[in-house]
Image (tube, rainbow over all chains, first blue to last red):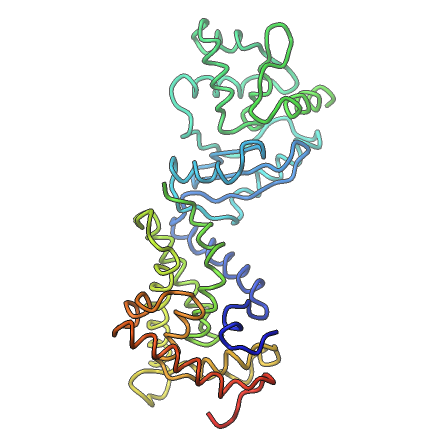
Length: 202
Length: 166
């Protein structure tokens, strides 16, 4: 420890990290109570890597894979939803529990409220249909296009899946090519393969 | 594009807590920090993208510290028009911590010196920015910060003990 006061004034004080953690938690609580927060978020370790979970006061608004770059996803939420974004709070604990159960093979669907504001128009129609594909089964992009009311919009179904703001929870991983190959996945093909294998095994 | 507020907390939270502590002492620093960040969160969407976030937060912290000090003064026996930093209490757990003496010495500085030391040396703001917050000229802010540090060198002994001859 330096004995120069100027130097010492810029160094962390004793117990500072613990006090900041407590103050941060209090800030999230107080801000949530007065609805001064646009988005809260947390991370969850999963078999398909670290997941970013983000929610508004309406429901879960975003689930993101590590491959999407969590910092970039948060910045994008700042533009699309609002920049009053804080880590923590208990809003996402129910989803984290449900995801843990899902990855353990104990759960086949999700009951938490969703905020689908990041999807519009045909993409939203596609997402609504995806939630109806049963656990453990798959549909082709063409089948999803038919079910969404636009049989020729196969490519649009592909981009709806690729921009799904709520992967895993809204099961775009259950959409595959008509020849049985996997197609694409925003979390990477190994993640898609893993999710499908998990559902087949259960 | 406005960055997530969490980044401001991560980048500046510790410095703002040290500033609050230097200005108010350890007990009231937590309240001032909470009020500062809650207020900053509310105003965050309206802050210009190119604003100096640290200077903005320290400005809010300064106003909150004045509020907290005034509220404390209302409950205390009036001894002076402007409350100097709360004298550190002897019954608090931080008593035994190694860096307590430094912050006790900071708390014992006259108000203008304490503020200028906090905003320039703890927060790292340039003197003109400090002057904008505390009032007066940049030269006066520079002098008050220098006087404060000179005084700390005499009151905060190198063996980590505060001289009793403050």
